[in-house]
Each structure stands twice: as structure tokens, then as C-alpha cells.
Length: 108
Image 1 (spheres, one colour):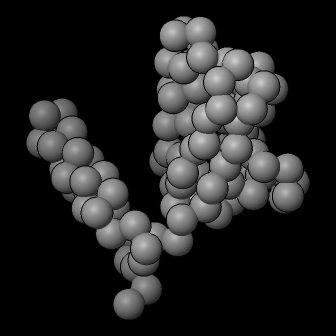
Image 2 (cartoon, rainbow, N blue to C red):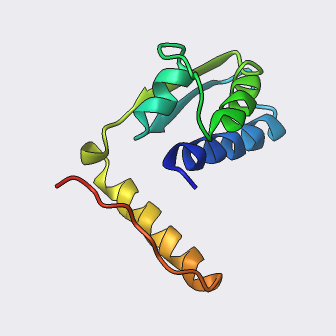
């Protein structure tokens, strides 16, 4: 699974939950360390192709059901606490599902 797919799956789940709670007319800010997601969903960048395209389109359909939805990109290096929590939850899921933990090489 690509990181873009993961980001969009998470966004779809969050927007679906917010919609289910009838919060589509509230001001909502989505904070993300995915610049691609923030810029595409904010309308600054176009999505052209990729494995994540169907997820992008689903998120975009949901996005337009909200009257005041904004996206804020937070660079990963400024988001270390959330990044550590994501890794912890991922490792917990891998253990519970008998999966090997796999990480891509990161810059550093």
C-alpha cells in the first residue's frame, strides 16, 4: 500500500465519521503531514494518476459535502509526536495480524 493510499483511506474514514455525526456544516481543519493530500484536497494541486486515484476521487466526493473544510499541511519534522504514535499503532496492528513490520527508508 502506498503512503498516498494510506493518507486517503484515513481521510475517507475521518470524513465519513464526521458526516455520520452530522458535522458537515461545521468548520473543520484537517491537519496532515501529507503535502500531496493537503494540496490536492485544498485545490492547489491536481491529481493526475496513480494507485491512489480511486481513493482521491472518493475523498473528493466526500470533501464537497462539507461547507467549511480546510486542509493544513504540517511537515513531518514538525510533527514528531504524531509520527511516533502512527508508528506505534501500525506496529500494534502488525503484531495483532501476524504481519511483519515494514518501513520504507527515510531521509536522515
